[in-house]
Image 1: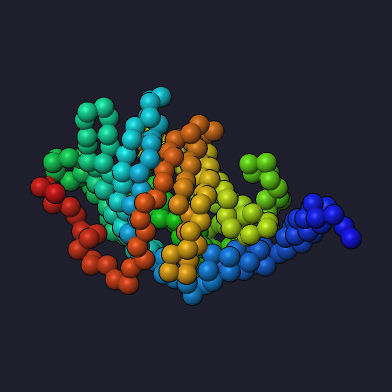
Image 2: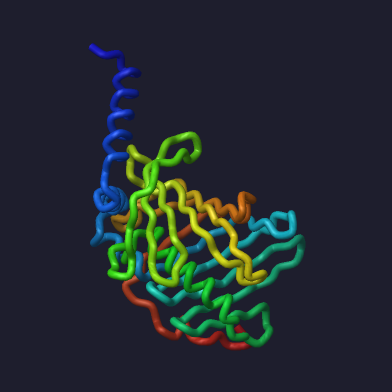
Length: 251
């Protein structure tokens, strides 16, 4: 009889070989099943998420909390609270289709610049793809890509392309088919330059039949940018459209 450790290594190698030989459609089907199935994933169209963590700005780690309300495909409301020493600032950002606004503290809301609005719509597209929501939509095409080492492990992946949206590379653990990393190029709305974004996701927990990542680490051009932990996720049946209207000045 094969020793246990050798048997485990053999099974891992068999799983890796099998997953590497899958077509992108087969791999995507496995990934959707691993997250809870296509029906369960439709619950991610409307959700509220609370998280906290640190954001690296000008070489310093700034603590933050953010509550995000999402109604896919093109509505999002984010309320950020930033903590810098004894100071606290609140920043609002709302996108409602082709309109968007931002507001800092008690200042009047301002329309998002076209570059900033485009960046937020890219973020919403990436959110849809990250959660495998609408990834089979007609405008999306998936492609095979070579396996890649992520955190010391060879992972299998797919590339998702869509017109006027950034190409997204998704890498999966070949033993569980849960995602471990996302890569894409985004245009920085503050400076207008392209940046390489890498998103690592961990700690999947089941919420209403959906496996949802609770830890996220984001790198920009190889430098750690955000590290966050989700404290609460609610999958919603309905969201009042007023949530995505232009914020009031006294909010």
